[in-house]
Length: 343
Figure (tube, rainbow, N blue to C red):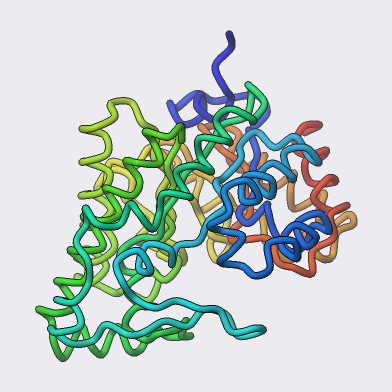
């Protein structure tokens, strides 16, 4: 049997046509997703209903034939499993009880106590490993400790991650303790996903770009290195993608520092820059601007071809520079894929 294209790219192979998947490919831009979410009742109910979560994961594979499916879940399920209260406000996003004091940190569960809550997620992975087409790679994921911590400290998403930076400055011990708990818990969470059938792991550090200088090394690089090192010790050969979004110059050398097999690139840097500075160390994933999924047309075709061309001399997985947005046109996704496979 021919090895899956994404696994070949992650191993460093340069392919004539890059494999493609898309962040948030199971999502609100698809009418079939909206119907399934309505059936589930709300977002968290959808995440924890293994059959329905598997269904929405499979929907974009059926529609588009992506080379990979990514588990449908959310990065904030882990803090919920650690004991914080989590809910979603309509139109405003996630809300959670905060962790900002030594007592609140001490009240959280340990890394080995998360699996009862997260059991349905592992069942979703098992279903997908059975149901996906044999040529489609199954990606599991988690949020990186820093990004997850920013939500736990603020109780919500924030534009500048100010509450997390403030706690880091005011009470370094509590902040570092939370990062450590998230690091060790993420290792256990991702290990269970691999045991259930995930073939690739992706670590999303959506707010890595707000860490500067030594803080970037301490709280973006080092937790990723610990997670990747331990996962690879447990599962030799496991491919891992790291996404330190908006890291800028921090993308350079990130793969070597952390052991990641691939670095995902956002669209705040150009494909040409990433090819010159990041791809020399291995596979790069990215980085079409998600706005093209809304606007479409010839600019989408041209931009897609440019990304393919820029990364054509090294291992590359085509993706967006961030998640597809709810206002995207499904027809534009089909056009992007057609353009990639004809380039």
